[in-house]
Length: 140
Image 1 (spheres, rainbow, N blue to C red):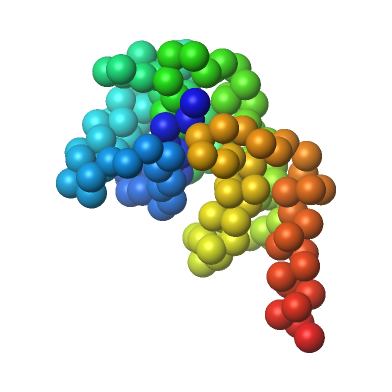
Image 2 (cartoon, rainbow, N blue to C red):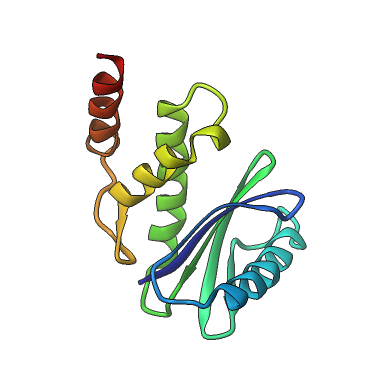
């Protein structure tokens, strides 16, 4: 099961966070700081899976953006690694440039892909269908 999903820039600033288990706000801040420090300190040659406390971190770097997913021990690391790539490809397909000004849309995309910590959809067309409907309604 996925515990949390983070998008972080190279400066260590969290740009998006979604938690699938309750974590208090002050603990989220500490958790994110530690997780970000662990991922940013690794070289590109190192494995993208990290054992951390009672869960695993799976991360990928895309230019200046890191996508970090915390999972429990039963989740398949490679499936989550591919989920991250699929998520970034969906973002790339929907957004022409700036993602950070459209965080509501990014959350919709993530919610279409992951529900209660479980991967529920990977088909790009089905993931983007609700957004295209929203865009048509906004235009009219």
